[in-house]
Amino acid sequence: MKTPATRTGETISIPPDILREIESFEEEAAKVLRGELSQDLFRPFRLQHGIYGQRQPGVQMVRIKIPFGGLNSTQLRIIAEMADRYATGVGHVTTRQDIQLHFAALEHVGTIMRRLAEVGVTTREAC
Image (cartoon, rainbow, N blue to C red):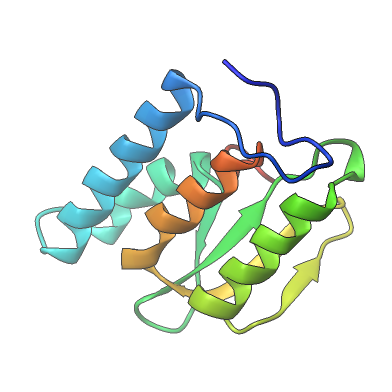
C-alpha cells in the first residue's frame, strides 16, 4: 500500500477499509435515491461520513477533513476539481480547518469521496 499523495502528485491506492466504507455509502445513498430508505434512517449513516443535509432538497454538504490543517498541492487540486464539477465551485474553509463543498447532489457524493481518497483525504467523521 502506498503512503498518502506525495508532493509529486502521485495518487495512492485506496486502503481496503476506506474503499469498503465508500462502497457502503454508495449502496445506502442508492437506496435513498430509489426511495427504499428514508432520509431519517439515512441521516446517522451519512453524518458518520461527513455528509450533511441541506435545507434545499436533493443536495448535500460534503465536509472534507484536513488533518492538522495541511494539504499538498495535489490534494488541493482534487478538492478544487470536485468543487467545480459537483458543487458550487467554492470550498468553504471552516473554523476547524476543514473544507466544505455545498450543493453536491447525493448521486455524486460517492464519486467525490473516491477521488478524495485517491489522494489521501477523507470525509469520514469530519466535524
